[in-house]
Length: 139
Image 1 (tube, rainbow, N blue to C red):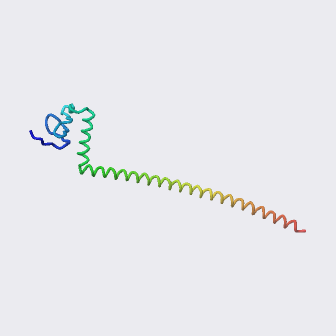
Image 2 (cartoon, rainbow, N blue to C red):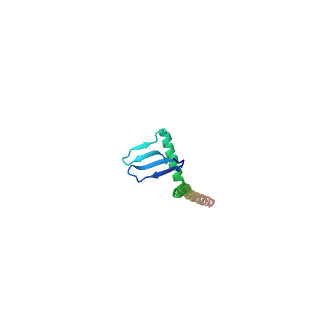
Image 3 (cartoon, rainbow, N blue to C red):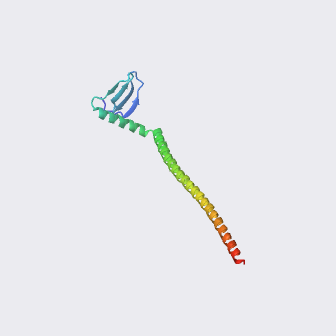
């Protein structure tokens, strides 16, 4: 018997006995059979088996170039979503400013209208006073 070590790997087997088998140094940690039953390693506790299987899968998939590209794209999507949210917030602030300025513009127009009305009334009173004084000045 040789002391040859099989690298830790996650593999799918085309055998008729099982669909997926996860091995660590050639020893099966977990096997998913064709009928749906799952066989776990007897030398490990269930939590240890699950942790080891996840570690192996993570290492296998993390090293995969396509997975790296996918993670990069996921990070890019996350950054773009954050940028979009920032842009939406800035847009909302600008819209609020526009509404505020439009409201101020309407107030200014109303005040100008009231001012014009007051000016017209004051002019009318001033004219009336002039006419009254002019009548009094005539003998």
